[in-house]
Image 1 (tube, helix red, strand yellow):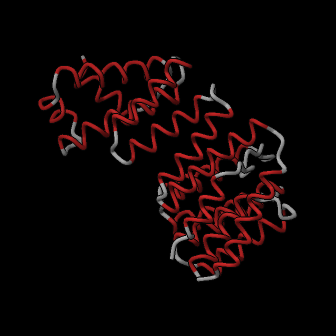
Image 2: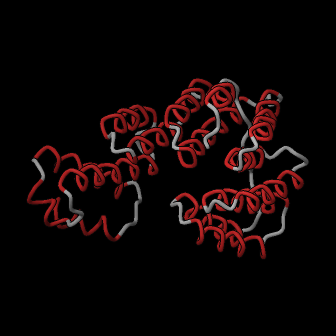
Length: 274
């Protein structure tokens, strides 16, 4: 059962402070959290849950406790363990005195999946209330972008995700990260024309952005691999058009010049572009 469209539309019309947080934790904890987040974003939920358990066993700051709880909630939602997802969301809400937007969001998803529509509405209303009380413009923009990522990843609601990204860009139009996120979202959907439209706007704002150059390169390679149904550099070299080769080599060279360190891409550059 999906969250009803009327409530999603209402939620889309307000901004939210979902998690533009500065985490207070050391390097080891941050690295552990990044490992867990990578598994979560890749939808490897069993592995994500394991990594969040490791993270929470070692990292005990307030921010760490919230991050662990919401991560576990999302992973459990992905595994259809909705009761445990609610339990973890409640931990995040307890730690933050009911101010964890991500906690409310994960709880809303679990409640909805369990058929508790009224409970889901209440959780989403908490998102809206907290959002309306946030007066920090840049936080609002960042949290719109985070909501977009959650709608894309967990609900596959691309239209909703785009609405949030539009809001983020409207509030903070010079934030290249929002454009990178938008481009990568469409690249994942294999809508490569739309992806590169976003990347091109971002490049005009910040031509020397390594994150952008890396995203462009990854999307360019994904596009070629999708078109020619192979990821092997030698096969792609023989199948690509001259224009495709020129574009992928330009993106690869730019990424490398800006500091990208990736052995596979270095090999591709050597085999195809030199």
